[in-house]
Length: 107
Length: 120
Image 1 (cartoon, each protein chain N blue to C red):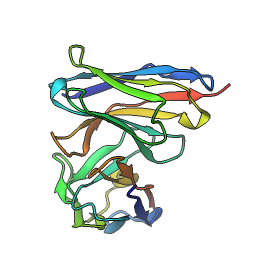
Image 2: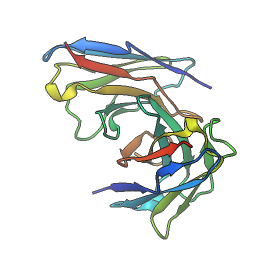
Image 3: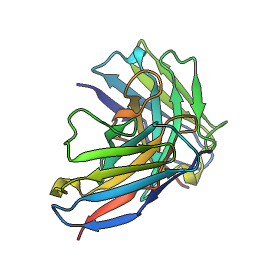
Image 4: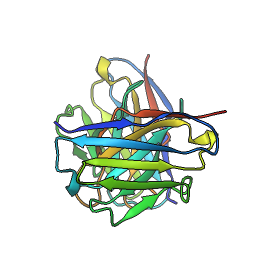
C-alpha cells in the first residue's frame, strides 16, 4: 500500500504567521491528494482537493501545491480559527490512506 | 443543504455485531459513491470502505476485510456498514462521507460521526 507521511506532527505558530505542512507519498500519486481540517469533536472538513484546488467556501489564505510524491499545505496568515489538526489523504487507488495528522497549536 | 446523519453506534462485546446507518439528504444519493472512515480515540483517520453509486463496486481496508460489509439502499437514501466479529481495535468514531465529485474524488461532506465501543 502507498503510505502517506506528514510533517511536522505538531506545529506551534502565532496569529499572522505563514505556515507550511508537508505530506509525502511512498510512490507517485499524481495529483490525487486532498487536505482536511479537523477541530476537536468535529468531523473533518475538506480544504483542498486534487492537490491544489481550493474547495468552495474555504478562505483563500489556504493553498495547496505539489504532485507526484511531495505536497504542501500552506496557510498565508494564520487566524485564530485555523488552530486545528490537518490531514492529507491520497485517493488515487485503494486502499485510500491518510497522513498521521499535523496538530497546529498556538505559540 | 447536504446532510449525512449516522446512527446505530454503541457498546458491543468483542466478537459481536453492529450495523451502522447513514441517512443522506440534500443531494441525489444514487449518483454518488459513499465512504466510511473511522477514527480511534485520540488517533488519526482511517479509511474503511467505499461503495459505488450503484453498489456494484465495493472496496475495503485490509483491517476490516472479511468482517465488515458495506451496502446502500438508494430508494431510502441510506448507507449501511455491517460490522461482524468486532474487536477492541474497532473502537472508534465512524463517519460516513460522500465523494465530492463523480469518479476519483475527495470526500465532502462528512457526517457528524457515531461512536462504536467494543469492550466486555
